[in-house]
Length: 402
Image (tube, rainbow, N blue to C red; front, side):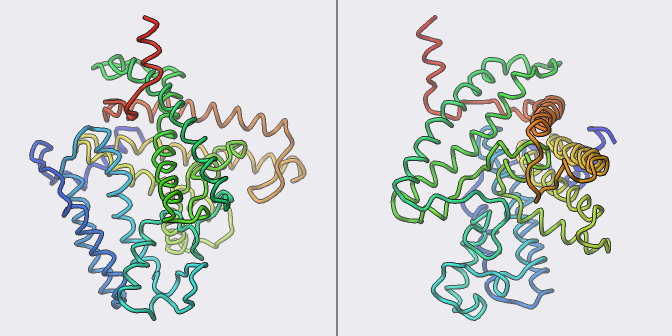
């Protein structure tokens, strides 16, 4: 299946929509209405099929907002579509179709031990709001796996986050300055294949922008006493754990979407009748997760323009295929070594030589996948349209030395 074929398939549900020129400015009502409606649906504890039916207009409204409204530049469109609208859409399936937060969720530090469903309406609404905005479900009994250990001391937390803030801004400034300087070449009608430097500049930009917003939000919340430091564990895991592609995505990368991946993966395994804990179950969940990730980022595509729907998807689908190959090679290696040298996700780390080989493989694989699929898609979406930071130290140094 080619990249163009994947894109055409994803564009089918959008074929009936009007041209991009007919969009209207995004209003607060466009954002608040589906969010409030979903919270009320979950908090009211309606019968299951009534709740499911009630999510249809909510999800339809989200698709309408993604395809009929405009807020500014392409990068703002893509960020808002993929980071907010898509998660609102998938929250409707997660908290209504697959789970019932009123009976299954519990905040572990809550002094009130009564189930959420037994509390008053205001308390239920407040807790559902917290659940929908807490992407990793930090502090809840349903917290996603592989979340880094939080810093509990407030002073140490603030010092650590200030250090992260300065380092992230520096990395973002260097990477984005390089991209902005080369953007005209790659946005031309017949652009060349991205160089390795451009590829990793884009990857570092994506990483740094996400981390920057999270770091600022955590600093403000903890400094003002709105949250405890343990409510804000590091967004990304340790990069030393990324000696396979699976571990890169499952441990080193952020886990903001894992709750959706887990729910849809479990549903897929159950629907297909696959026995849990088997190799086939792992593969079904793997490809379901990357399919959901592709769908989530498609909302960003749609927000930029209907003709671009699906342009982001091939990168995520390809990563699932690459990890499947990786799993097969590792399984063969374990068999050949009789399980003594290569261990699974939960075993002890493999020897240093194998980890080094793994780092080389993961870096090379990500370079190829991102260079051929991710970066060209990002340039097609016009993501390099303006600086993220209000001031560029790199730009100032270049101008001063000129």
